Length: 284
Ligand SMILES: C[S@@+](CC[C@H](N)C(=O)[O-])C[C@H]1O[C@@H](n2cnc3c(N)ncnc32)[C@H](O)[C@@H]1O
Image (cartoon, rainbow, N blue to C red):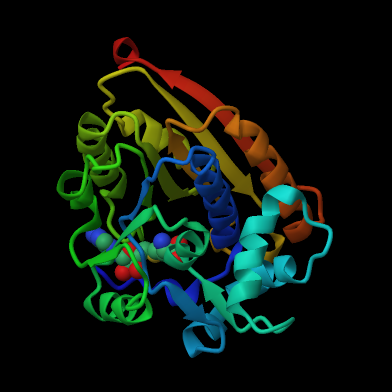
């Protein structure tokens, strides 16, 4: 059941899209001085060695971070993410890929706090070792979907919950929806960000249909669809659902999405989805 290992996929186009947007979400929260908490429900290892045989199996990073790392024409909205990549790698040599905990930690201010959770025991041990000198960081080893109950609402009353499950169970969307229902009851103003794969054009809509929201909410559906020439049956589209998105975050999605698309898919056959939706109790 828990066979998923992110090392096989580290640095692929999905990681680039999600982490570039995550960086900007964090920077947007930092426009106010007040502290916030970053909660990572499915944190993974924190950092991935790209010379590891698992990363080398399909070399997914070649159609992802490798094409970004070499760029020098990136827009300002990509700068924070690319500087994390550079900090984690020596010079121009791309040897490791920073996962969401490292991306977040690199951008957080001294007043902000991290809660990082990983269910896989050995991954969690590695994450703990990686973060042993990080301040204001707690590591947990529980079912990520239970965090909305165990760590919310945060004492800061401000926060971002990043949910990046492995989708190795058929009922993942239902489990996400149930976890969000609890999270939004306890922390209605929180920014909740959920990554999902898009298979046969479906993913975001399916997840949105499952949500049982108890008050009107703004949702931003941000997806990247690459043409499938380089993917040979593998996932070539994915998205982030952002609940309570920052004001006008669609423009950030547009800049980042279009630029990544241009770098990763010069065929011009890819596309992005950038849709702001309002839900209400009545429409459920
Ligand atoms: C897609 S990876 C996370 C990648 C990470 N968020 C990043 O961006 O670098 C999903 C992770 O969830 C872990 N996992 C699987 N089921 C889980 C669960 N129920 N609760 C918490 N973690 C889980 C897996 O071991 C895997 O490390």
